[in-house]
Length: 75
Image 1 (cartoon, rainbow, N blue to C red):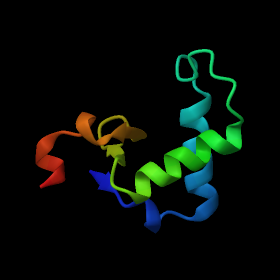
Image 2: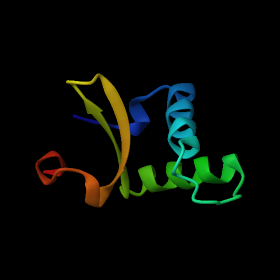
Image 3: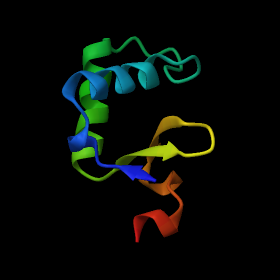
Image 4: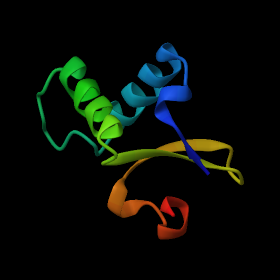
């Protein structure tokens, strides 16, 4: 299930994004400040280039690039 980013509380969205951008393997040696990485993800969400996916089985949220989202969820 896709979760509209703008329906999450601001603090919840920020924590979700921060968790995503600070996970091991996501920075690839990138020294970009946390605030900049969070802003980039917010912009991608606003532009429809990224989505929040809630997995009912695992009860977990994921941030995915548009090309990673199952096509049937985008229709």
